[in-house]
Length: 485
Ligand SMILES: Cc1cc2nc3c(=O)[nH]c(=O)nc-3n(C[C@H](O)[C@H](O)[C@H](O)COP(=O)(O)OP(=O)(O)OC[C@H]3O[C@@H](n4cnc5c(N)ncnc54)[C@H](O)[C@@H]3O)c2cc1C
Ligand SMILES: NC(=O)c1ccc[n+]([C@@H]2O[C@H](COP(=O)([O-])OP(=O)(O)OC[C@H]3O[C@@H](n4cnc5c(N)ncnc54)[C@H](O)[C@@H]3O)[C@@H](O)[C@H]2O)c1
Ligand SMILES: O=C1O[C@H]([C@@H](O)CO)C(O)=C1O
Image (cartoon, helix red, strand yellow):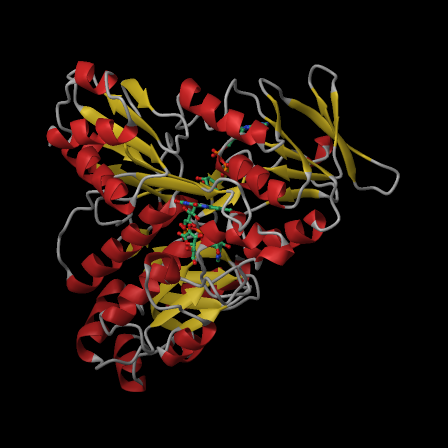
């Protein structure tokens, strides 16, 4: 950061938090200080930093950034004051769509931008590039922040722009974990899926594909394998554990989903690690070689082996060693004044369960963004009290024999009681040693049934386990749980 550091050094102290705060109180709406204010605050560097000062800067243009922008607008604090610095070429969108509607086969009308910009995923206004312009929000596209200096409150982007911020909101999310290049992780035909450019590249491969291998049995693995069924592709999922979705599903719940996938033609290779991905004579991936020497042919490989928080270049702000990510308090404040972190990258106090957590799901991205910006703008000291909520939807495309949509609320700890087997519902209840209901999962519920789940997981009632075990249907089990509230 040589040049940025030199430029920033000249301005050290000129635009301290105090001067930003003064301007916020007294400047009457402009993001940039008037020439007179600048002269008062710092006579030397004003010229240098003309055009470089931003009152609020959000780094990252993903889900959390979109919801943060909306909250700024709702509070009348966006116009001329807010800048979003994004690595991507398009404004924030609802990332979950990338492995759902985006991967529908061409004849089933796949989702495309601008259809799913934030905040349509939660029923809000669709924030297109025009929306940002109309609301006076500056968005820098395809210009990731590469360097950061907390002392001088300065950022440097890859194009060399120097930005001084009053308040900084880090919402850099996660990046897909990759297989090493030396084992073929970067071969043509090997895909990772995190952003819309990745999804476009995958769609172009699916159009030509015959045999696909999905590596990883988590969210991406399950959603992409189901999508591949819609393209009528020969699909194999390979993962190291003994069942899919090991982060959340019990072995018996996983078995039910695996059977459903098998009925749709998907093959499973469990307990297997990848030794390497091989290329054919055209240089494209042609097979996955497993550690036991077996070979699975593939013309397209999709790797979904987890995500890593994108903390760079903000490591100095404070990274949590246990869960990764930037550590924040219950108002998303980092250890450095005026710097906040939200969404996937934030390691925050999960109040209900008294632990520090990172949550890599969209509901938290939306709610953390709203909470952070509201507390920042209103100076209300309100602690974030999050109830974990995860969901997935697969086989949604028209013509699919069964649409699958599950939701989970709470904590997946303790013993489990499971009812139903795609008839069409399944419910799983996680119950601790005091008979308190800690987590609840429901497949194919009605909206009324789904709306019961957060109430149960939030209030953690003591349930009659024997009664729940004897439930004759999912409806019956939910009624038993409801009556314990
Ligand atoms: C394919 C896919 C499907 C998903 N489906 C679901 C789902 O069904 N349900 C669910 O609950 N969750 C789902 N998730 C998770 C959910 O999308 C994330 O939790 C959510 O997007 C997190 O929001 P975020 O803003 O923290 O991060 P992101 O949305 O990832 O945004 C981070 C942004 O920061 C940018 N960035 C990173 N570094 C820099 C930098 N240095 N400078 C500038 N910009 C930078 C990135 O390019 C990106 O645009 C899915 C995720 C993926 C990848
Ligand atoms: N519906 C949703 O909530 C949803 C959907 C898609 C993606 N996402 C998010 O996107 C991110 C990435 O998802 P993901 O599915 O990659 O992560 P994940 O953590 O859900 O699953 C990773 C899987 O990869 C496998 N794995 C791990 N290391 C491996 C290795 N070295 N070789 C082979 N397999 C390995 C394991 O089977 C593991 O279950 C996560 O943050 C996830 O929450 C969420
Ligand atoms: O949360 C979500 O947002 C998108 C979509 O609803 C936006 O249109 C999607 O597929 C989700 O699961």
